[in-house]
Structures are given as C-alpha cells and as structure tokens.
Image (cartoon, rainbow, N blue to C red; front, side, top):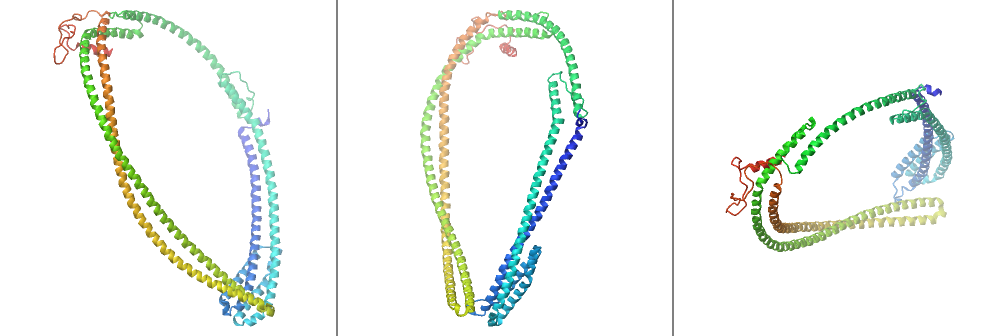
Length: 637
C-alpha cells in the first residue's frame, strides 16, 4: 500500500494547498520587489529628465538676459519704441527664472553632475549681478553702458562655459541612470521567467499526484457504482483496503453490492408468489366473464331480431348486476319510445306536407326580394363611384398643397444657409483680424531686431556702416507693414459691420418665409381634413355597397336553400311512410288503443280544414301530452 493512501483527503488537500500558496507567495514577493526597484529606476530617470529640461530652460534664460541688456542700451532712443521699464521687468523675470532653474537642478542630480551644477553658482551670480548693473547704467548713461559691453561679454562666456560643462554632466548622469534601470529590468525579467517555469512544473507535479491518488480511484469507484445501479452485482474493487475516505467509499459500495444481491433474491420470491395469486384471480374472472358474455349475447341477439320485450334474469356476479339492471331499464325505455314513435309517425307525415307548401311560398317571396336587392346594389355602385372621384380630387389637392409647403420649406432652408454663410464670413473676418494682429506683432519684432542690428553695427564702427543702412531699411519696411496692417484692420471692421446688417436683413426674410410656411401648413391641414372626410365617405359607401352585395348573395343563397328545403320536406314525407313500415317489424307488445288507421282527425292546419292523414286513435286514459313524455324518455335513454 502506498504511503499517501494512509493520509486523509483533507490532509492531502492541505499539503497541496500549502505548496501552491508557498509558490504563489514567492512569485508575488519577487514581482513586488521587481516592481519596487523598477519604480525607483523610473523615478530616477524622471528626475534626470527634469534636470535636463531645467538646464535647457536656464540656457535660454542665459541668452534672454543678454538680449535684455542690449535692449536697455537703445531704450532711451524714442525712435526704437522700446520701454525701459518693460526691459527692466523682463530682466528681473529672466534672472529669477534662471537662478530658480539652476537651484532646482541641485536637488535633482547627484555625484559629478551635482558638483558641475554647483560650479555654475559663482559665474551665475556674477553674470546676473553684472547684467542688472548694465541695465541700471543704461537707464542713466547709455554711453558708459556701451563701454562696458566687452566686460559683460566675458561674464556671458564664463557662464556659458560652466553651463556647458554642467549640461554634459547632467546628460552623462541620465545615461547612467537609464542603463542601470534597463539592467535591473532585464535581471528581474529572467527571474520572473524562472519562477514561472518552477510554478508550471510544480503545478504539473501536483496535478499528476492528484490524478494518481484521487482521480483514478474515484473514477474506478464511479464505474463500480454505475455498474451496481444497472444491476451488475459481479463488481469487485481493490480500494476497500485504503485507510482514507476513498477506502470508506469502496467499503460502502461493497455493502451496497451485498444488499443488492439479497434484494434480487427477495424480489424473485415475491414475483413467484404474486404470479400464483394472479393466475388464480384470472381463472375466476374468466369463468365470470364467460357467464356475462353468454347472458348479454343472448339479450343482444333478441334485440337484433327486433324483440324488445326480452329481459335478463341470470345469476350474474355482483360486479355485473348493475349492468344487467341498466340493460333491462334501457329495453323498457326503448320499448316505450318505439311505441311513442309509432303513434306519432302519422302526425309527422301531415306536418311535413304542410311544411312543403310553406316552403314553396317562401321560395317565391325570396326570389322577389333578391331582385329588389340587386337593383339597390346597382344604384349604390353608381353613388360609390361618384364619391370615389370626389375623394380622389381632394387627395390631389392635398398633394398640390404638400408640394407648395415643401417649396416654402426649401426657401426657408435657403435663407438659413444664407444666414450661416454670413456668420461664416463674419468668423473669417475675425480670423483675418487675428492674422493682421500677428503681422503687426511680427513687424514690431522685426523693428526690434533691426534695432539690435543697428546696435551691433554701431559696435562694429565703419565696417558695420553698410549693415546699419540695411537695418534702417528693415525698420522702415517693418513700419510700413504695421501701417498697412492697421489699414486692413480698419477695412475689415467696416466689412464686419456691413455683414452684420446683411445678417439682420436675411433674418427678417427668414421670418417672413416662416410665416408663409405656417399659412401653407394651415391650408394643408384643411385640405387634408377634406380629403380624409371624402375618403371616409367613400369607404363607408363601399362598405354599404359590400353589405348590400352580401345581402343579395345571401338572399340568392336563401332562395336556393328554400328550394333544397322543399325538396328535403317531400323526401322527409316519403321517409316518414317508410319509417312507419319499418316500425311494424319490431315486437313491442300491446299498444294502447288501436293501430294507425285512416279516420277522422283534428287537422294540423292553422286556418282552414284540409284533407290530411289522421293520427292513430288514442285511448281515453292517455293524456294529450303523451308523445312529448315519450320523447323525454328517449332523450334520457
């Protein structure tokens, strides 16, 4: 016996679950560790990128400070149109941005990069201080400020060199951080792959062990129980020796098998006893049924011969006593009914003769009524056709009004499109105004650049004189562009006012068309109502015409049915005579009074006496309503 078969299924499940939980815990811990380290690397890369961005912005502010110094040198010349206060404010903002960016980088980088960033602090402070002094001096003595431009350039280049070294250090630090993050990601990727392989192998081993120790024995037990449910008691299993729950189940199957064997034996004995008792009961029933069949066969044989006075008086089993009494009662009622039928056959013959005369009269009146209905149907056909033409004309008028309404609605749509087009023109004019503003700003910047070029030409002396002339021309061209932009802006404002006036006129036109459309809709509603009324009249007349035609057809059918009824009545009279002849073949005993003979009788006709068959004479003791009582007796039977 295997060692694993000695443990219970609960303990096996706990061991397997513990192994899976341990495996999942190791995998989850490794995943969390890798996620944490990768997040740290990503954060370091983000800090390096932010430091590089700050350094680039600081580099631009470095250039912006020099531009502010140059602008301050020409701010006192009104021809350049530069405000000294704006230059001074820009200098302070640019200096604050420059120092703030450099200070931020000191907390974002480390190692050599932090040292390089720290080395920028001294030249940065000197550059900012010198730029502030230059702008302040330019406000009071522009000539002295221009004389100090070479010293300012030295400060500019010193800071530029320090910032270049810091930029290289920041870039190198970012590359090292990215390389370290990539290496960590690669290491943890292979670690997770290895853990996944170990997990798959471990799960496979657990599944194999479960199949060998649990699934296969359970399948064997299921097969044994299935065979046992189908009545196979030859099953045998080697699992009852196990000490776990499967062994207990196998022992229970063995108990069920033994119980099934005992049950089969008891059922066989019970079936044999039941079979003997059933054979004795069937024999007794067969003897009783033979007597019943003979007795009822004799009675039915007498009935088939027309003898209605025969009654059963055999010694039948108690179960058939009620059937014997029911047969005798039925024969009593049948005998009484046949007597009543024989007594009333003559009256039926007289009644059928009178029904035939009435049917002939009804046929003539029905033919006259059919002719009148046919003429009425023809007149209604003509009226229906006339009303149909009226309805068609009303529908045509409604269609014409609908077309007019559609044309009016199209006109409204055209006006709406015109309003939308005017709005689009107004929007385009606004966009052109924005573009002209941009051109005006470009002209201003061009004027400013020309001013800077003039300053540089002045520094160059005679060698830059030609460049100064070109700069002066550029300034003049920029001034003309600004003037043209102002004129265009004025023209566009005038055009916008005219477009607004056009939009108002088009709106008024749209309102007028809307009123026209509403009136057309009212006309359309009236014409539609007229068309609907005419259509309803046409439909009603068509229904009346259909009803009259149906009445005509029904009358024709009634005439045919009356003819058929007349023929059937004559046939019924003949069949009544035949019925009286057949009734004479039955043996029904003595009938009260005499048999049907010709003689005087009360006529069935309502208004006048007429020759007719006489009813058979009744005894003085029989009441006048006796035939009705006989009929009730027959219905009860």
